[in-house]
Image (cartoon, rainbow, N blue to C red; front, side, top):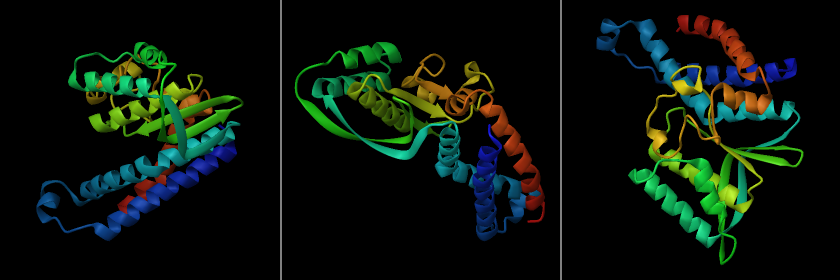
Length: 246
């Protein structure tokens, strides 16, 4: 990762940290029983973690991702709106597939499902608006990524897959991904153990799923994930010092 990019990431990350600390200071409450059971330091750290996770997850990840993609020579837009024009038969098939997955009637299989959807090539069409968290263009190649919390609920996961299906039905050449910016189960993809999204995606095998290192290295190239961890560790030294003063 270029030093200029690292500095930009540091700035975004520091903003997330500062915002979280400000909220902890502003909304902290006296909790004598919790403090007696645990400690004031532990309660402050817990409050900071929740606030920081919200800051990073809502916009921070998108901002960092966008900067990395741009500095990697790509065009990149956050919250990209796309008007897709899709055969009505394909839209109906998407609904059938997602209903079957949600009810547990079928097991997820991205490639097989996509073939069924893209088989519809005639009939009436409908225009649907799709918002993608991240849009990346490198030459003639377009990538659309739906970024979700690392432990998404069923509704979030289903909506994301519907959007990915619609984007591919409109233009099969597009690259589309369901992206989680870290793996809560461990470093390897096989460590992912949050079961909820497995009803909608095969989280361990579907090639439209990017988790942790795969997500960051796809956007910024090999070594991006490792560089980011180093930056977080660096900012963390100052963050811990700030928390000790609260």
